Image 1 (cartoon, rainbow, N blue to C red):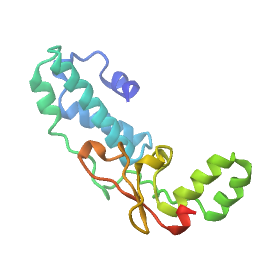
Image 2: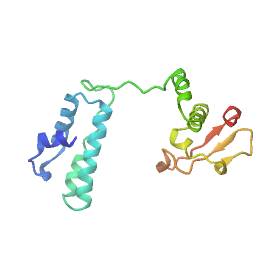
Image 3: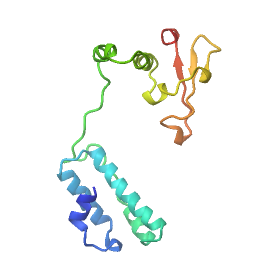
Image 4: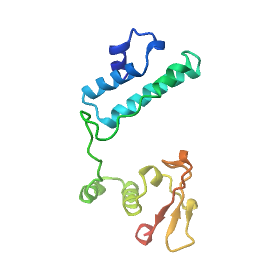
Length: 163
């Protein structure tokens, strides 16, 4: 992203970088074959860089305000590459790997498959964190992927996973 930015606008004073320039940077990323999601992430990163500079009073806040008017590329826009959805690995592949892993890692992989938990949650499971009051145990991670949004997360551990 920085390479594209500097190639196109490296000598432009930052106060003159506006929505049209940002759209040209974005168009160059699309021209390079970057996917829609990746382009949007890089444009957001660039906007955050400008926001940081404004927060430290290195640039006028009006620059950030103007850049915020540039919307993300929407799904289905012509000329923008879309990526295929990431699908889970086939169970046969996972089963083939299990004998090659440490016993503890294999148990964690099996628990992940049976519960739908994320890998980062599985490594946090401790007996003290389990609610074992019912036939299905409940694990509530102290920290999880959507914690910053104040979403609650519960991982249900049924009889097979308990075994």
